[in-house]
Every structure is written in C-alpha cells, then in structure tokens.
Image 1: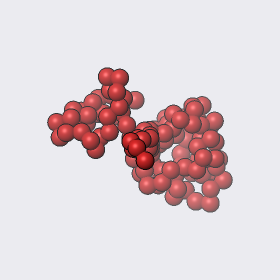
Image 2: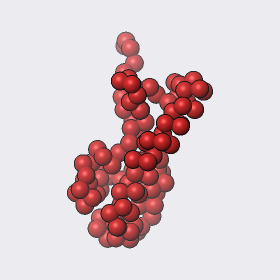
Image 3: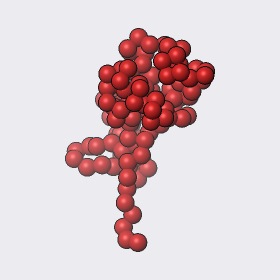
Image 4: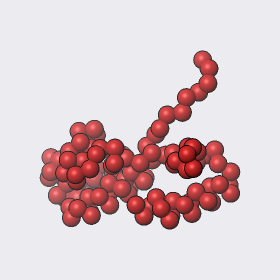
Length: 111
C-alpha cells in the first residue's frame, strides 16, 4: 500500500466555537438561526456550538451566505501550520504541546 497519507480533518470543538463567535458577532441568536435554516428545534445549533456535531453542507452554505464568509472559513482544521510545515498535535512531544497550547491561546482562539 505504501506510505500512509495524512488528510486534513475538522476540529469540531474549535469549529463550534468559531461558528458561535461568527453568529453572535453578527447579532444573531440561535432561535434566529433556527428560523433561517428551517430547523424543527434549536438544539442542533447548541450542539454545533459545543462541537458535538457539524452543520450539514446545506446549512454550512446557508450560514456562509448569511454571515458573508466562505464555507471554509466556518471550519477549523485539526492541523496547525507553523513555520511552513504542518504538525499534528497528537504527534508532538509534551513540551511542543505546551508551546502549541500557549500559541493557540495567543493567536488562534483570539482570531
């Protein structure tokens, strides 16, 4: 089979925080989003916020148009690009993980 290929995956918790920040930053409430997306209840939106589930592709498209961002801007990859290369968090040493956590607090979560 050869070398295993790494492919990007979605960080659901950070994606949920980003979606919540974009929605609330635009002045929308979960019930307003529920109505806009024609959802039967508001619970899926809270589950997005917590990173338990992701919006469907249709809902991502609708949210991106409502919020004026690209669909890709709603999603957060598990990989971080640092100094021109990608490191997977699980493959880092404990020291590198502490540095990454510090970096995320300073830059990534503030964005």
